[in-house]
Image 1 (tube, one colour):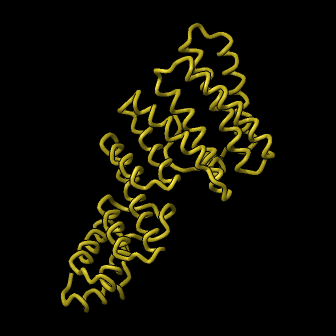
Image 2: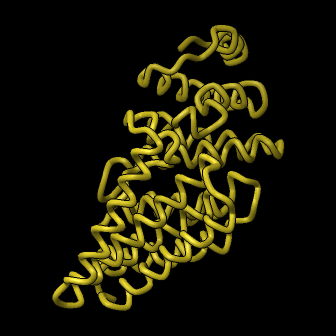
Image 3: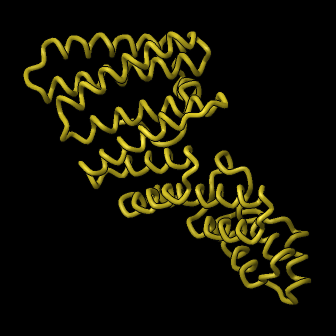
Amino acid sequence: MAARGLVLFTSFVALSGCGPNTFLSERENDIKASTRAIETARGDGPRAKAYSARGTAYSEKARFSRAVKGISNDEYVRLFDLAIKDLDQAVALSPGDAEMYFNRAQAYYDRGSLDLTESKSGKEWLDAAASDFEKAIEKDPHNSLAFDRLGLTYESNGQADKAIRAYTQEMALDSYGKRRLADAYCNIGFHHQQENDLPAAATAYEKSTEFGVADDKTCPYDPYANSVEIFTTETRQYDKAWEIVRRGVKHGRFIAPDLIARLVKDSGRVY
């Protein structure tokens, strides 16, 4: 199954040292190998896995090529349609296998995410992805990665409350869910702050800090510094501000000395 995180294949290639031509060649090899496996499979189970593998290879080839502007939109749609045709066949052959739904959901998620990066509406694909991730979870309730991807799908689709529920369920199975919750609450705080709802922003930022440290590449604002500033200068909830400072120290988060000085002055006490 796919690795964790929101990583376009451009990043994957850079990190792995694998060039674009090599990556695409490997996907072509996967397509050929899966085609042979489909032709020689004995039974619906193995044949379903082969269709799913080929569909995933088509989807990854399409996503990578689109991300690096290597194909036309028509060619992307053609490859994506091939992917979904195979992934549909895999589900039809093995409807009780969670992996079949997960792989199709991932293809839908990839298309929806790429649409969003191009300022298009990815809702149609993200809705389909959520439905399939939920089906994968129904078939395998202990699949933490399915909960993870479901949460990312909901976040991408602007459904923060559903994302929080998915990440909370993930956390019960895998500690990585805490990281996701830190990021999700941080982003909720950011959106509240953009809307100038500072009390709601501070509450969300505070919740983010309960789960550790949000990824600064995922959340535009630092939940520690921003919550301390809002609690100090706007809502004057000094006890909350000091609690965030203590958490910041514990997690090695830098909070500007002038903000700490303002908190000391306004609260009338020292850490």
